[in-house]
Length: 373
Image (cartoon, rainbow, N blue to C red; front, side):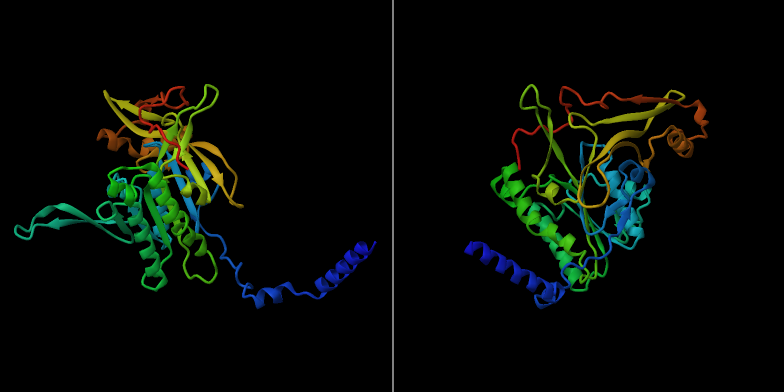
């Protein structure tokens, strides 16, 4: 009975204290009254075709956004699209190209603003064999970045320059691609070890670089920085007769875990695309690909996970509709065949041999022999 009375007394005192307690005053006394002030969410908009396919406005600023999938499925096209839109918004694109398949001419065709400056031979005054691209962007590649640690060091330096007021822009980092570069230990030991690489990604990015982006959403930071990256993937074969192959992320899962949104292009066992071609006067031109695209992970109140299809062209994405494909052919068929062409005269064909998942792994997928966390 005494214990019950003691409990009752404690409850009465607690309730009395709660009535006079001011939580906001307590926060202020601990300097926590401004700790939850975040900027209003802004977006780097998608094109209408991707917006319709994924049911989200674009890439949320101040977050990590992963695009993953097989080769030639539309990932780089999405990267260029986002970079182009960001550039128009006054957000500085920072390209980190470690897979070395980048093409400024392709980016320019999609609307990215860059100027090609031809080198001049100082002796003859004639155009040389080099082209330098200039414009509102930063670009770095394997010429100076050879390890995971090099990439994180470069990003840390750029972010520090921004903090010191030497780079007065919101930044959009664009890495193509995670999983294409080894860690320092792998290089020194002459052994591209997946476990070492995954450990370096977790240490350099998961524990440090990745945290800088959501922190830039806080009200007290003058700029908002965003990280869009392509992640190379592999395939872990089915472990039992009843299980299915599993997509794996090159470089481990640190980037997946830290991403607010993860989009996957194509299939697991093959490309998950179909090649769309037209024929005219005996000539065949592949002008587009139909690709599967899905949101596999989405955190917070930014939309819902969706699966859809979209058409990838050299000029960007268009909706997967007969009308959109017809209009695209009208706009560019004369370039493909070097003459005016009536679209009605074109014979359209489609190779969908890798559209459906397969019981056998395609030769183009990278089979994982070691599980990497």
